[in-house]
Length: 319
Length: 276
Image (cartoon, rainbow over all chains, first blue to last red; front, side, top):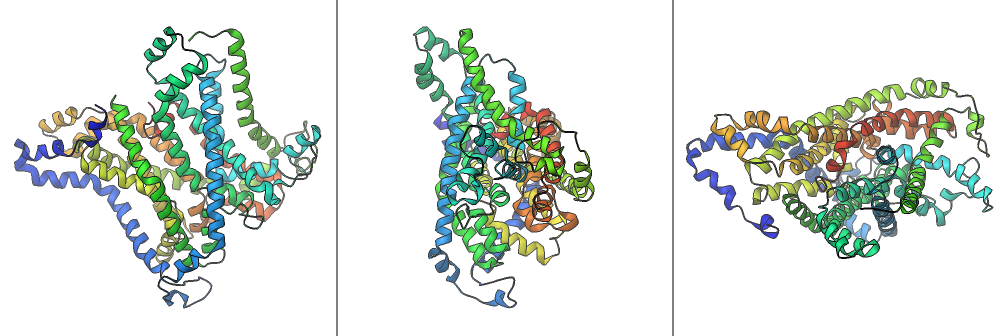
């Protein structure tokens, strides 16, 4: 039931063509094709644009401010430039820090809160509704809101720190040492509820009988959590972790509204670097090359795991 | 599981602290939006004030939030509806006609997954140049096309997760009754996926509403979506926090209300069927 469900090859799929319905198989074929048509009408031309425009852009030194630069063929020139670009390396490092620290803490806090929420808590329905708000809040609004809260003169955070005697004039977002941690904190603030909501739904859909058996055997507290709950929750945790990583790697709006990548390049994530190169210095040939390098690297890192997890999910849901 | 009252109390307190951490910044945002400029900029918090609703009028009329709300609603609804219209038949094809575990179905789903993982910065410049070339930048049409693309990816993954366990015999019975594939889809599947459709619509709408990178590049002036207009307030009005936060509240409110109303369907859609 488990592994075979995914790996079973297409035998069953081939069967209908040898069934009595064979004589209308040609009409059938077009009817089936037409089901993919609406999606293909949008997706295929856009993919063609990515490929055709992409190849043109990465091989030319096009800069929107320099007329004629679009015809300047430079072959691999954009790539050699990228591989010796300290800002690219820097933005990869910033993005990695952002994803590892942000998503890591979201998972720890989120799973913890979901475990606490799974049971009798007064006001549970209201809690579930309220924690949705950070999650669906427009990231631009979240970024600006936290910029207001972290403001060195009128920010509420500085007021609170002043009240407890830790100084009330921290310029969190203009200090290279604290700017990235501050943005990561907002990422955690915004997306921990996502982990809570999905893990909680996962916990509630678990089969109760292993828990009853384990409790009869005397398991409780952390033993129960470590040996029964977390292993049963494994597939849900993997999917949540993956979705958070995919989303966090793309982060753009928070950084753009809070620091625009500064001070210097201390908070410049990949998306912000590509945007800055393409639409602030208008170096769009090079910008496309950066996007391509980063995307290929990301796909090599994430895609195999993601595919396996999709398989996992399929198997789980048939169980 | 039976727990002692003391344990329940401790657990509740930890959870309430988390809820406070989630909601306190929002309360501060809303309260700032109702203050006068002077109070909003005060170094010590002003706890008691007379609500100033003109911040909202300013943001809506002078700040262009009214126009942006129209644009965002149009782009969001159009892309969500188109995404569902294109995504549902493809999900039907890859779960009901082809068995979900077949090679064709797996390949199609992996391709959709691949496009979901690819960061938008790969396609930002190619899409920009192609859309600019045919006059689809600086208005909402190009952005609607791009958002429809992402809505389709979302719709296929969500519908697939709902349909993967749907008994395939029902479709076969419909075909034997002489229905074509499209009629079978409409008469057997559609009545069973209203929940998935609601989830997809809401998530696609939120995705489009909140999307900033393409919106920033592809729209300007009267075609700006909500996030672009709000972000623009920062440079235009400097530290006018009262008006800026009013715009933020206006821009976020429809999405927040919408999400809370339909939250029942969201967990499953959000995780692409990872949980039920």
